[in-house]
Length: 376
Image 1 (tube, one colour):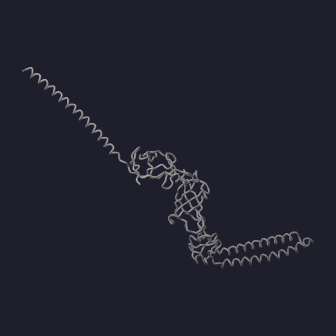
Image 2 (cartoon, rainbow, N blue to C red; image 1 turned 180 degrees about the vertical axis):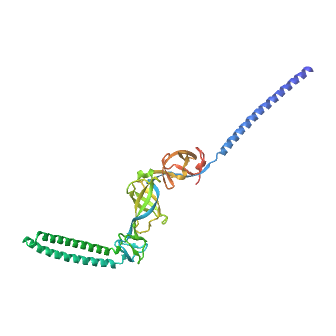
Image 3 (cartoon, rainbow, N blue to C red; image 1 turned 60 degrees about the vertical axis):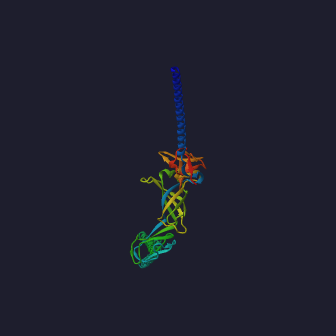
């Protein structure tokens, strides 16, 4: 009896060990399965987290562009003359007003000529008297010379007539000069335009008493204009006579005007460290007016092939400049070197090739290798 009971008890213990072993195995398998499931879930979560960044792009181009310098300038008259009186007197008439177009030699104003006409007549009378005195002195000289040769007069008497003749000749010369001066003054009572152009300003009115040097009017030449602008010190070495200049003015939006460099000043302005330049501009239709401000583009060389990208594509990190390009569906960071700015585009001298896809919007959210979605 006791031996059987003992045997059953052993079997029972063996069964319990198997159950515990099975439970342990099941627990391990369950743990492995849970771990595997968690790993899969993490991988799936990781894949779900990689989202594409939306971007807009532009294809890099090789454009034929001319290097240039930009500036702000002012249009000035090509020439300006101040017309003044050379005489004293009452202004008889003035024949122009502000804005009047005039030709070279046109009558501008007249000074009352009565006094100057009388001066001419007086000078003419003085000349006539001097000439009569000279004629008498000449006749007497001839008589005294014959007598002196025959020793009928003394040398002193002959020398006297020679001196009187010389004085009479001098009086005639002075009288002629006086007459010429009087006539010259008479001609100056009429004032003529020294050049063609337009009257900028008129300062007098008929009836005014004017003096020598009184400002009457100013005339400007507007069929040609001077475009004055400045170039910074760093660009001075690129300046040449005859370079092309293009400019725009607010008065004629969308219209481009042209000129050529005529004057390069010899020294820089100390305060601004810039050099003054003047270009000649044709203005045959007189549409451009002196005083207009102009946005100037000075072309400093011939056109050349240049890789360009939009200015908006560039990112600046201290002294470095970079941008992002799209390769496949991934963003790639590029360090680039830039040149001159051409309107909305920047010259890329290194780091970018023609036809590469450049990110222009959304690049601030990008890093190397990030998945991108190009917006269409």
